[in-house]
Image (cartoon, rainbow, N blue to C red; front, side, top):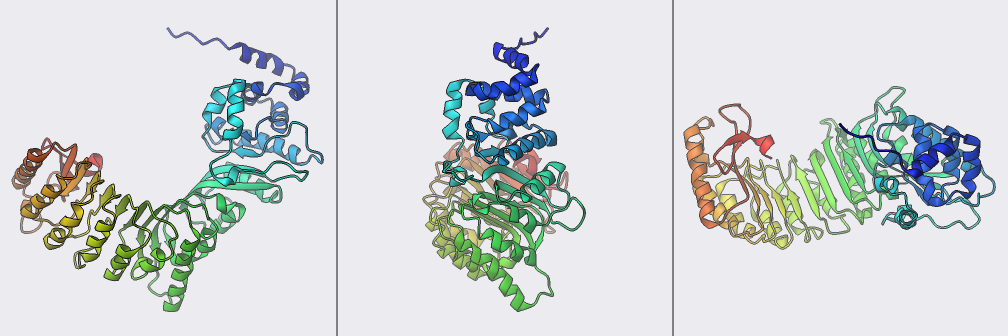
Length: 485
Protein backbone atom coordinates (compact mmCIF):
# COMPACT_ATOMS: atom_id res chain seq x y z
CA UNK A 1 0.00 0.00 0.00
CA UNK A 2 1.55 3.29 -1.07
CA UNK A 3 1.61 6.19 1.36
CA UNK A 4 0.79 9.70 0.25
CA UNK A 5 3.71 12.07 0.72
CA UNK A 6 2.70 14.81 3.18
CA UNK A 7 3.08 18.43 2.03
CA UNK A 8 6.22 20.28 3.05
CA UNK A 9 6.15 23.23 5.44
CA UNK A 10 6.84 25.46 2.45
CA UNK A 11 3.80 24.10 0.61
CA UNK A 12 1.61 24.47 3.68
CA UNK A 13 2.77 28.06 4.11
CA UNK A 14 1.97 28.81 0.47
CA UNK A 15 -1.47 27.22 0.73
CA UNK A 16 -2.20 29.19 3.91
CA UNK A 17 -1.13 32.47 2.29
CA UNK A 18 -3.28 31.83 -0.80
CA UNK A 19 -6.42 31.31 1.31
CA UNK A 20 -6.38 35.05 1.80
CA UNK A 21 -5.79 36.44 -1.69
CA UNK A 22 -5.67 40.06 -0.54
CA UNK A 23 -2.98 39.17 2.00
CA UNK A 24 -1.02 37.25 -0.64
CA UNK A 25 -1.08 40.24 -2.99
CA UNK A 26 0.09 42.65 -0.31
CA UNK A 27 2.87 40.26 0.80
CA UNK A 28 4.56 40.01 -2.62
CA UNK A 29 6.54 43.23 -2.18
CA UNK A 30 8.40 41.77 0.81
CA UNK A 31 8.31 38.08 -0.10
CA UNK A 32 11.82 36.48 -0.16
CA UNK A 33 12.87 35.54 -3.67
CA UNK A 34 13.31 31.85 -2.81
CA UNK A 35 9.60 31.65 -1.97
CA UNK A 36 8.46 32.93 -5.36
CA UNK A 37 8.83 29.66 -7.36
CA UNK A 38 6.84 27.40 -4.97
CA UNK A 39 4.18 30.05 -4.39
CA UNK A 40 3.86 30.67 -8.13
CA UNK A 41 3.38 26.95 -8.78
CA UNK A 42 0.78 26.71 -6.02
CA UNK A 43 -1.09 29.79 -7.27
CA UNK A 44 -1.04 28.45 -10.83
CA UNK A 45 -2.25 25.00 -9.78
CA UNK A 46 -5.12 26.42 -7.73
CA UNK A 47 -5.93 29.02 -10.39
CA UNK A 48 -5.47 32.08 -8.20
CA UNK A 49 -5.47 34.23 -11.31
CA UNK A 50 -4.88 37.64 -9.73
CA UNK A 51 -2.02 36.33 -7.60
CA UNK A 52 -0.34 34.81 -10.65
CA UNK A 53 -0.63 38.10 -12.56
CA UNK A 54 0.81 40.04 -9.63
CA UNK A 55 3.67 37.55 -9.22
CA UNK A 56 4.58 37.96 -12.88
CA UNK A 57 4.89 41.71 -12.32
CA UNK A 58 7.00 41.23 -9.18
CA UNK A 59 9.05 38.26 -10.48
CA UNK A 60 12.52 38.58 -8.87
CA UNK A 61 14.51 36.69 -11.54
CA UNK A 62 15.51 37.75 -15.04
CA UNK A 63 13.81 34.67 -16.56
CA UNK A 64 10.42 33.06 -15.93
CA UNK A 65 10.62 29.49 -17.35
CA UNK A 66 6.88 29.03 -17.78
CA UNK A 67 7.15 26.34 -20.47
CA UNK A 68 8.39 23.79 -17.93
CA UNK A 69 5.04 24.11 -16.11
CA UNK A 70 2.96 23.70 -19.28
CA UNK A 71 2.98 19.95 -19.71
CA UNK A 72 0.06 20.21 -22.13
CA UNK A 73 -0.95 23.00 -24.48
CA UNK A 74 -2.27 25.02 -21.54
CA UNK A 75 -3.84 28.09 -23.11
CA UNK A 76 -5.29 29.35 -19.81
CA UNK A 77 -1.87 29.40 -18.12
CA UNK A 78 -0.43 31.35 -21.05
CA UNK A 79 -3.31 33.84 -21.05
CA UNK A 80 -3.00 34.52 -17.31
CA UNK A 81 0.77 35.03 -17.59
CA UNK A 82 0.50 37.31 -20.61
CA UNK A 83 -2.19 39.33 -18.82
CA UNK A 84 0.35 39.87 -16.03
CA UNK A 85 2.94 40.97 -18.58
CA UNK A 86 0.43 43.39 -20.11
CA UNK A 87 -0.02 44.97 -16.69
CA UNK A 88 3.75 45.14 -16.34
CA UNK A 89 4.21 46.78 -19.74
CA UNK A 90 1.54 49.36 -18.97
CA UNK A 91 3.53 50.70 -16.00
CA UNK A 92 4.83 54.18 -16.72
CA UNK A 93 7.38 53.87 -13.94
CA UNK A 94 9.41 50.70 -13.57
CA UNK A 95 8.40 48.74 -10.41
CA UNK A 96 11.16 48.48 -7.82
CA UNK A 97 11.41 44.67 -8.08
CA UNK A 98 10.98 44.43 -11.83
CA UNK A 99 13.71 42.07 -13.02
CA UNK A 100 11.85 39.99 -15.60
CA UNK A 101 13.48 40.17 -19.01
CA UNK A 102 12.74 36.75 -20.53
CA UNK A 103 9.59 34.62 -20.59
CA UNK A 104 10.74 31.14 -21.65
CA UNK A 105 7.95 29.00 -23.11
CA UNK A 106 10.18 26.02 -23.91
CA UNK A 107 9.84 22.81 -21.93
CA UNK A 108 13.37 23.02 -20.54
CA UNK A 109 14.50 24.29 -17.10
CA UNK A 110 12.44 21.86 -15.01
CA UNK A 111 15.22 21.94 -12.42
CA UNK A 112 14.39 25.55 -11.62
CA UNK A 113 11.00 24.50 -10.28
CA UNK A 114 12.32 21.36 -8.60
CA UNK A 115 14.83 23.19 -6.45
CA UNK A 116 13.37 26.02 -4.37
CA UNK A 117 16.28 27.15 -2.26
CA UNK A 118 17.73 30.63 -2.31
CA UNK A 119 21.04 29.12 -3.42
CA UNK A 120 19.34 27.71 -6.49
CA UNK A 121 17.69 31.04 -7.18
CA UNK A 122 21.04 32.81 -7.04
CA UNK A 123 22.49 30.16 -9.34
CA UNK A 124 19.60 30.46 -11.80
CA UNK A 125 19.76 34.20 -12.35
CA UNK A 126 22.97 34.18 -14.46
CA UNK A 127 22.11 30.80 -15.96
CA UNK A 128 18.85 32.09 -17.38
CA UNK A 129 20.86 33.63 -20.14
CA UNK A 130 21.77 31.34 -22.97
CA UNK A 131 25.21 31.03 -24.42
CA UNK A 132 23.70 32.78 -27.41
CA UNK A 133 23.47 36.54 -27.33
CA UNK A 134 19.77 36.39 -28.10
CA UNK A 135 18.95 36.21 -24.38
CA UNK A 136 21.62 38.64 -23.25
CA UNK A 137 19.32 41.58 -22.56
CA UNK A 138 21.17 44.74 -21.51
CA UNK A 139 20.38 46.19 -18.07
CA UNK A 140 17.81 48.95 -17.64
CA UNK A 141 19.07 52.44 -18.35
CA UNK A 142 15.93 54.48 -17.93
CA UNK A 143 14.29 53.27 -21.15
CA UNK A 144 12.03 50.22 -21.27
CA UNK A 145 13.74 47.33 -23.01
CA UNK A 146 11.64 44.85 -25.03
CA UNK A 147 10.62 41.73 -23.15
CA UNK A 148 11.77 38.54 -24.82
CA UNK A 149 9.58 35.50 -25.32
CA UNK A 150 11.58 32.33 -26.07
CA UNK A 151 9.78 29.51 -27.90
CA UNK A 152 10.38 26.38 -29.94
CA UNK A 153 7.85 26.23 -32.78
CA UNK A 154 6.28 23.12 -34.26
CA UNK A 155 4.14 24.54 -37.04
CA UNK A 156 1.31 22.96 -38.96
CA UNK A 157 0.61 26.19 -40.84
CA UNK A 158 -2.74 25.03 -42.19
CA UNK A 159 -4.04 24.30 -38.70
CA UNK A 160 -2.25 26.12 -35.88
CA UNK A 161 -3.42 25.20 -32.38
CA UNK A 162 -5.24 27.75 -30.21
CA UNK A 163 -2.17 28.46 -28.10
CA UNK A 164 -0.04 29.36 -31.14
CA UNK A 165 -2.75 31.56 -32.63
CA UNK A 166 -3.23 33.39 -29.32
CA UNK A 167 0.53 33.87 -28.87
CA UNK A 168 1.08 35.15 -32.42
CA UNK A 169 -1.82 37.58 -32.28
CA UNK A 170 -0.73 38.80 -28.84
CA UNK A 171 2.84 39.44 -30.06
CA UNK A 172 1.63 41.09 -33.27
CA UNK A 173 -0.27 43.69 -31.25
CA UNK A 174 2.79 44.46 -29.09
CA UNK A 175 5.68 44.39 -31.58
CA UNK A 176 7.26 47.52 -30.11
CA UNK A 177 7.58 46.06 -26.61
CA UNK A 178 7.89 42.29 -27.23
CA UNK A 179 10.53 40.29 -29.06
CA UNK A 180 9.53 36.75 -30.07
CA UNK A 181 12.64 34.58 -30.24
CA UNK A 182 12.54 31.04 -31.64
CA UNK A 183 15.51 28.68 -31.24
CA UNK A 184 14.12 25.62 -33.06
CA UNK A 185 11.43 25.64 -35.73
CA UNK A 186 9.84 22.67 -37.48
CA UNK A 187 7.44 23.24 -40.36
CA UNK A 188 5.00 20.44 -41.19
CA UNK A 189 2.70 21.97 -43.77
CA UNK A 190 2.10 24.82 -46.17
CA UNK A 191 -0.62 27.37 -45.52
CA UNK A 192 -3.53 27.31 -47.95
CA UNK A 193 -6.63 28.83 -46.42
CA UNK A 194 -8.83 28.79 -43.34
CA UNK A 195 -9.34 30.78 -40.17
CA UNK A 196 -6.63 28.80 -38.34
CA UNK A 197 -4.04 29.10 -41.14
CA UNK A 198 -1.07 31.46 -41.10
CA UNK A 199 1.23 32.03 -44.11
CA UNK A 200 4.84 31.23 -43.34
CA UNK A 201 5.96 34.80 -44.12
CA UNK A 202 3.51 36.12 -41.52
CA UNK A 203 4.99 33.85 -38.83
CA UNK A 204 8.57 34.66 -39.82
CA UNK A 205 7.75 38.37 -39.75
CA UNK A 206 6.96 38.10 -36.03
CA UNK A 207 10.26 36.45 -35.11
CA UNK A 208 13.66 37.83 -34.18
CA UNK A 209 15.31 35.75 -36.86
CA UNK A 210 18.88 36.15 -35.61
CA UNK A 211 17.85 34.02 -32.61
CA UNK A 212 17.10 30.99 -34.80
CA UNK A 213 19.45 28.02 -34.37
CA UNK A 214 17.63 25.16 -36.08
CA UNK A 215 15.12 24.97 -38.96
CA UNK A 216 13.62 21.72 -40.23
CA UNK A 217 11.14 21.71 -43.13
CA UNK A 218 9.26 18.40 -43.26
CA UNK A 219 6.76 19.25 -46.00
CA UNK A 220 7.07 19.59 -49.80
CA UNK A 221 7.88 23.09 -51.06
CA UNK A 222 7.93 24.44 -54.57
CA UNK A 223 10.97 26.31 -55.79
CA UNK A 224 8.88 29.50 -55.65
CA UNK A 225 8.11 28.88 -51.95
CA UNK A 226 11.82 28.34 -51.33
CA UNK A 227 12.56 31.64 -53.06
CA UNK A 228 10.02 33.39 -50.83
CA UNK A 229 11.66 31.84 -47.76
CA UNK A 230 15.17 32.86 -48.85
CA UNK A 231 15.27 36.49 -47.55
CA UNK A 232 14.16 35.29 -44.09
CA UNK A 233 16.81 32.54 -44.14
CA UNK A 234 19.49 35.14 -44.78
CA UNK A 235 18.55 36.91 -41.53
CA UNK A 236 19.12 33.75 -39.43
CA UNK A 237 22.74 34.61 -38.76
CA UNK A 238 23.05 32.23 -35.79
CA UNK A 239 21.52 29.25 -37.61
CA UNK A 240 23.42 26.03 -36.82
CA UNK A 241 21.23 23.41 -38.52
CA UNK A 242 19.13 23.56 -41.70
CA UNK A 243 17.13 20.67 -43.13
CA UNK A 244 14.98 21.00 -46.26
CA UNK A 245 13.27 18.25 -48.21
CA UNK A 246 11.06 17.60 -51.20
CA UNK A 247 11.72 20.80 -53.13
CA UNK A 248 9.70 20.33 -56.28
CA UNK A 249 10.53 21.97 -59.60
CA UNK A 250 7.75 22.48 -62.13
CA UNK A 251 8.39 21.19 -65.64
CA UNK A 252 6.87 24.38 -67.04
CA UNK A 253 9.04 26.84 -65.12
CA UNK A 254 10.76 29.48 -67.20
CA UNK A 255 14.54 28.74 -67.36
CA UNK A 256 15.49 32.30 -66.43
CA UNK A 257 13.07 32.29 -63.51
CA UNK A 258 14.47 28.92 -62.43
CA UNK A 259 18.04 30.25 -62.36
CA UNK A 260 16.94 33.38 -60.51
CA UNK A 261 15.09 31.42 -57.80
CA UNK A 262 18.04 29.06 -57.28
CA UNK A 263 20.44 32.00 -57.06
CA UNK A 264 18.15 33.83 -54.62
CA UNK A 265 18.11 30.83 -52.28
CA UNK A 266 21.74 29.71 -52.53
CA UNK A 267 23.13 33.24 -52.08
CA UNK A 268 21.73 33.31 -48.54
CA UNK A 269 24.27 30.72 -47.38
CA UNK A 270 26.99 33.37 -47.43
CA UNK A 271 25.20 35.00 -44.47
CA UNK A 272 25.03 31.83 -42.34
CA UNK A 273 28.38 31.96 -40.61
CA UNK A 274 27.31 29.58 -37.82
CA UNK A 275 25.88 26.81 -40.03
CA UNK A 276 27.35 23.42 -39.05
CA UNK A 277 24.70 20.90 -40.14
CA UNK A 278 23.16 20.97 -43.60
CA UNK A 279 20.67 18.39 -44.84
CA UNK A 280 18.99 18.54 -48.26
CA UNK A 281 16.76 15.63 -49.27
CA UNK A 282 14.94 15.31 -52.60
CA UNK A 283 16.06 18.84 -53.43
CA UNK A 284 15.82 18.50 -57.19
CA UNK A 285 17.07 22.01 -57.91
CA UNK A 286 20.57 20.92 -56.80
CA UNK A 287 21.13 19.09 -60.11
CA UNK A 288 23.97 21.06 -61.69
CA UNK A 289 23.71 23.77 -59.02
CA UNK A 290 25.35 22.25 -55.93
CA UNK A 291 28.35 24.51 -56.42
CA UNK A 292 26.14 27.54 -55.79
CA UNK A 293 25.38 26.27 -52.29
CA UNK A 294 28.86 25.02 -51.41
CA UNK A 295 30.73 28.06 -52.72
CA UNK A 296 28.68 30.33 -50.43
CA UNK A 297 29.39 28.44 -47.20
CA UNK A 298 31.31 30.60 -44.76
CA UNK A 299 32.36 28.11 -42.06
CA UNK A 300 33.40 24.43 -41.81
CA UNK A 301 30.50 21.98 -41.81
CA UNK A 302 30.26 19.25 -39.21
CA UNK A 303 27.49 17.30 -40.93
CA UNK A 304 26.44 17.21 -44.59
CA UNK A 305 23.56 15.15 -45.90
CA UNK A 306 22.57 15.25 -49.58
CA UNK A 307 20.09 12.43 -50.08
CA UNK A 308 17.80 11.20 -52.84
CA UNK A 309 19.03 13.93 -55.17
CA UNK A 310 20.12 13.75 -58.79
CA UNK A 311 23.66 15.12 -59.07
CA UNK A 312 26.01 15.61 -61.99
CA UNK A 313 29.66 14.62 -61.89
CA UNK A 314 30.51 18.32 -61.73
CA UNK A 315 28.46 18.57 -58.52
CA UNK A 316 30.55 15.81 -56.94
CA UNK A 317 33.76 17.46 -58.11
CA UNK A 318 32.67 20.68 -56.47
CA UNK A 319 31.84 18.78 -53.28
CA UNK A 320 35.27 17.14 -53.15
CA UNK A 321 36.97 20.54 -53.54
CA UNK A 322 34.69 22.47 -51.17
CA UNK A 323 36.64 24.50 -48.58
CA UNK A 324 34.04 23.87 -45.88
CA UNK A 325 34.26 20.07 -45.67
CA UNK A 326 37.73 19.56 -44.21
CA UNK A 327 36.31 19.08 -40.67
CA UNK A 328 33.33 16.95 -41.72
CA UNK A 329 32.23 14.32 -39.16
CA UNK A 330 29.05 13.03 -40.77
CA UNK A 331 28.45 12.51 -44.50
CA UNK A 332 25.40 11.00 -46.17
CA UNK A 333 24.88 10.59 -49.91
CA UNK A 334 22.06 8.05 -49.51
CA UNK A 335 20.00 7.62 -52.64
CA UNK A 336 22.36 9.67 -54.86
CA UNK A 337 22.93 7.47 -57.92
CA UNK A 338 26.65 7.07 -58.58
CA UNK A 339 26.50 4.11 -60.98
CA UNK A 340 27.80 6.03 -64.00
CA UNK A 341 29.95 8.52 -62.13
CA UNK A 342 33.73 8.47 -62.01
CA UNK A 343 34.84 7.49 -58.47
CA UNK A 344 37.67 10.05 -58.38
CA UNK A 345 35.68 12.93 -56.78
CA UNK A 346 34.51 10.63 -53.98
CA UNK A 347 38.07 9.35 -53.56
CA UNK A 348 39.32 12.90 -53.09
CA UNK A 349 36.46 13.68 -50.71
CA UNK A 350 37.22 10.67 -48.47
CA UNK A 351 40.92 11.51 -48.40
CA UNK A 352 40.14 15.09 -47.32
CA UNK A 353 37.90 14.04 -44.42
CA UNK A 354 39.82 10.91 -43.40
CA UNK A 355 40.97 12.38 -40.07
CA UNK A 356 37.54 13.58 -38.91
CA UNK A 357 34.80 11.48 -40.55
CA UNK A 358 32.77 9.40 -38.05
CA UNK A 359 29.69 8.32 -39.99
CA UNK A 360 29.45 7.54 -43.69
CA UNK A 361 26.15 6.64 -45.40
CA UNK A 362 26.40 5.42 -48.99
CA UNK A 363 23.16 3.40 -49.04
CA UNK A 364 21.34 2.96 -52.34
CA UNK A 365 23.96 4.73 -54.42
CA UNK A 366 24.16 2.03 -57.10
CA UNK A 367 27.92 1.62 -56.58
CA UNK A 368 29.48 -1.28 -58.54
CA UNK A 369 32.58 -3.43 -58.05
CA UNK A 370 35.01 -1.28 -60.04
CA UNK A 371 33.96 1.91 -58.25
CA UNK A 372 34.21 0.37 -54.78
CA UNK A 373 37.63 -1.10 -55.58
CA UNK A 374 38.81 2.41 -56.50
CA UNK A 375 37.42 3.81 -53.23
CA UNK A 376 38.94 1.21 -50.89
CA UNK A 377 42.36 2.90 -50.36
CA UNK A 378 40.71 6.17 -49.37
CA UNK A 379 38.12 4.44 -47.19
CA UNK A 380 40.83 2.50 -45.33
CA UNK A 381 42.33 5.81 -44.13
CA UNK A 382 39.13 6.99 -42.41
CA UNK A 383 40.54 6.16 -38.99
CA UNK A 384 37.76 7.83 -36.94
CA UNK A 385 34.90 6.07 -38.71
CA UNK A 386 32.38 4.53 -36.28
CA UNK A 387 29.37 3.91 -38.55
CA UNK A 388 29.40 2.77 -42.17
CA UNK A 389 26.21 2.05 -44.14
CA UNK A 390 26.60 0.55 -47.60
CA UNK A 391 23.34 -1.37 -48.15
CA UNK A 392 21.67 -1.14 -51.56
CA UNK A 393 24.79 -1.41 -53.75
CA UNK A 394 25.49 -4.28 -56.16
CA UNK A 395 28.77 -5.82 -55.02
CA UNK A 396 30.22 -9.27 -55.70
CA UNK A 397 31.43 -11.70 -53.03
CA UNK A 398 35.11 -11.22 -53.82
CA UNK A 399 34.95 -7.41 -53.67
CA UNK A 400 32.88 -7.54 -50.47
CA UNK A 401 35.65 -9.62 -48.90
CA UNK A 402 38.16 -6.95 -49.99
CA UNK A 403 35.93 -4.30 -48.40
CA UNK A 404 35.69 -6.21 -45.12
CA UNK A 405 39.44 -6.73 -45.15
CA UNK A 406 39.93 -2.95 -45.30
CA UNK A 407 37.23 -1.98 -42.79
CA UNK A 408 38.52 -4.59 -40.32
CA UNK A 409 41.52 -2.33 -39.82
CA UNK A 410 39.38 0.60 -38.69
CA UNK A 411 39.56 0.26 -34.91
CA UNK A 412 36.75 2.74 -34.16
CA UNK A 413 34.22 1.12 -36.51
CA UNK A 414 31.34 -0.35 -34.47
CA UNK A 415 28.25 -0.35 -36.71
CA UNK A 416 28.37 -1.73 -40.26
CA UNK A 417 25.64 -2.44 -42.80
CA UNK A 418 26.58 -4.14 -46.06
CA UNK A 419 24.62 -5.63 -48.97
CA UNK A 420 24.43 -9.37 -49.42
CA UNK A 421 26.72 -10.30 -52.33
CA UNK A 422 25.41 -10.41 -55.90
CA UNK A 423 25.81 -14.19 -55.92
CA UNK A 424 22.91 -14.35 -53.44
CA UNK A 425 20.43 -13.32 -56.15
CA UNK A 426 18.97 -15.25 -59.06
CA UNK A 427 18.71 -14.18 -62.67
CA UNK A 428 15.53 -12.13 -62.14
CA UNK A 429 16.77 -10.50 -58.94
CA UNK A 430 15.04 -12.97 -56.60
CA UNK A 431 16.89 -13.82 -53.40
CA UNK A 432 18.25 -17.35 -53.24
CA UNK A 433 17.60 -18.11 -49.57
CA UNK A 434 20.13 -20.91 -49.19
CA UNK A 435 22.87 -18.96 -50.94
CA UNK A 436 22.38 -15.71 -49.03
CA UNK A 437 22.59 -17.38 -45.62
CA UNK A 438 25.67 -19.31 -46.73
CA UNK A 439 27.41 -16.21 -48.09
CA UNK A 440 26.56 -14.05 -45.07
CA UNK A 441 27.85 -16.74 -42.70
CA UNK A 442 31.08 -16.92 -44.70
CA UNK A 443 31.51 -13.14 -44.57
CA UNK A 444 30.82 -13.10 -40.82
CA UNK A 445 33.51 -15.76 -40.34
CA UNK A 446 35.89 -13.57 -42.34
CA UNK A 447 35.20 -10.69 -39.96
CA UNK A 448 35.54 -12.77 -36.78
CA UNK A 449 38.90 -14.05 -37.94
CA UNK A 450 40.26 -10.49 -37.91
CA UNK A 451 38.38 -8.76 -35.07
CA UNK A 452 35.23 -8.99 -33.03
CA UNK A 453 32.74 -6.55 -34.58
CA UNK A 454 30.01 -4.98 -32.50
CA UNK A 455 27.16 -4.69 -34.97
CA UNK A 456 27.48 -6.05 -38.51
CA UNK A 457 24.44 -6.57 -40.75
CA UNK A 458 24.04 -7.87 -44.30
CA UNK A 459 20.97 -6.70 -46.16
CA UNK A 460 18.76 -8.35 -48.78
CA UNK A 461 16.09 -6.70 -50.93
CA UNK A 462 13.45 -8.00 -51.35
CA UNK A 463 13.16 -10.52 -48.53
CA UNK A 464 11.67 -13.80 -49.82
CA UNK A 465 9.56 -14.07 -46.66
CA UNK A 466 7.98 -10.61 -46.38
CA UNK A 467 8.88 -8.82 -49.61
CA UNK A 468 10.53 -5.95 -47.75
CA UNK A 469 14.11 -5.10 -46.94
CA UNK A 470 15.63 -7.40 -44.32
CA UNK A 471 19.06 -8.01 -42.81
CA UNK A 472 21.02 -10.91 -41.45
CA UNK A 473 22.63 -10.19 -38.09
CA UNK A 474 25.77 -11.76 -36.66
CA UNK A 475 23.83 -14.79 -35.40
CA UNK A 476 22.44 -15.46 -38.87
CA UNK A 477 18.94 -14.35 -37.88
CA UNK A 478 16.83 -12.60 -40.50
CA UNK A 479 15.23 -9.37 -39.24
CA UNK A 480 13.27 -6.46 -40.67
CA UNK A 481 15.67 -3.79 -41.92
CA UNK A 482 13.80 -0.92 -40.27
CA UNK A 483 13.76 -2.63 -36.86
CA UNK A 484 17.43 -3.54 -37.09
CA UNK A 485 18.38 -0.02 -38.17
